[in-house]
Length: 251
Length: 250
Image (cartoon, rainbow over all chains, first blue to last red; front, side):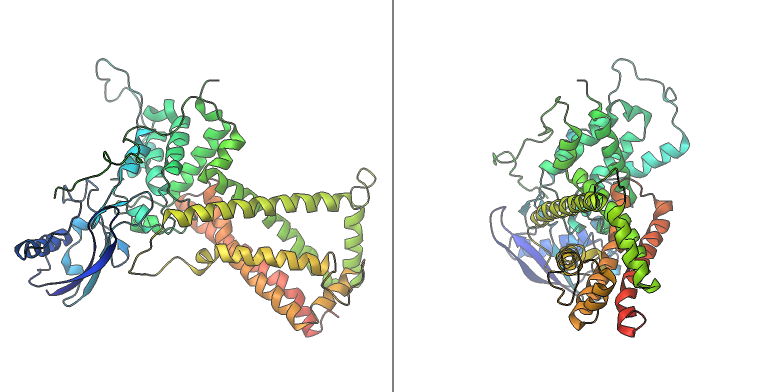
């Protein structure tokens, strides 16, 4: 396959960036999108140019490190991560636009790499459960009904890749935050922090400069793990409930 | 690929793992609701639903125009005497006006503040544009502005009668006929009602999501309810100018 790539190049956080055009040859349909970029980078290095910086780690769709907007869609045309997107979904001779996640809360570090530590700070403010120290409890000590376990697991699938923020016209992190809140709030293990978790995580989300939700639904379309749009509604309910209960804090 | 992250060097970024929230002070419910994006959206949802309920009553009352001048004018008179003698003359009317003004202002202020925030959260768009959300979803902001301007015109036209040249106080039926006997009266009204339909189509469903009623298995029912409400209200309101234009109401 021969492809024309228009890739966002930016030397550093404060540097101006621009889409730069590259031609690549010899791409096989079995390659992943990242392998195609590796091929291009090898050519760039041989030519003495700076290779394109992009995040990646597991390359099997479970870590959430890779992420770029391909032809205007987060992770490209298939519902998967960029590492699991294969070149067979493109045609020979295509022109492909590759841009970094665009959100005020995700500043560009270099080329296609953005700083997603705002997500870490949301997690740090409530994405945990209190556990007794000492010996490990028996696995069956706390019964969890099957539907609840299924709901929690569906939301635990979130890998924090940030595609929801990248796809949202408001740069909102509601789908990410709701996945974390619903995951832990639906389980008995998460009950002690049920109110403070949602209030604190939403508070941190707002403080980090993410936009609000206008229910456009772009996030759920982009999510490689299929977190449903209605998770946001579940979190909204948790938020209003927690607010009415006084935030679960002692006076 | 190793990439230098600049977080440590940049003093404006908070260190990871440290929540920026001030802990352990019990926040007031109203204050925390208004401060957060989720809470402000809930204010928009509740005020939107109040206005929607009012619009259903307003639309049904408007249809009295087809029952003749006595029916509509009699209803308008009854509204002014409602609640007497507990309430003074027009007391109920002014309470309703005050409540509606509060909801409109809250809805508009919250929308403006959230919109400013949303636009700031995506300072740079994508070079590669692609298909976007539905027309109703995309036009919520400008549609809301259009509806706000329409409300101003509508009050000046049929409540204060400032811009209605042939109007007489106390004769709503005749004033309605006067408004819809002009081309611009019809054009402004029908345009606004189409904008209203679009606003409700996304707004009702969105309000349900915001207030925590959204569930995957309930989604279709909520969307259907939003479409039905939008269609019924738009058609119900537009029936009046169409009635005047076609001569059914004169």
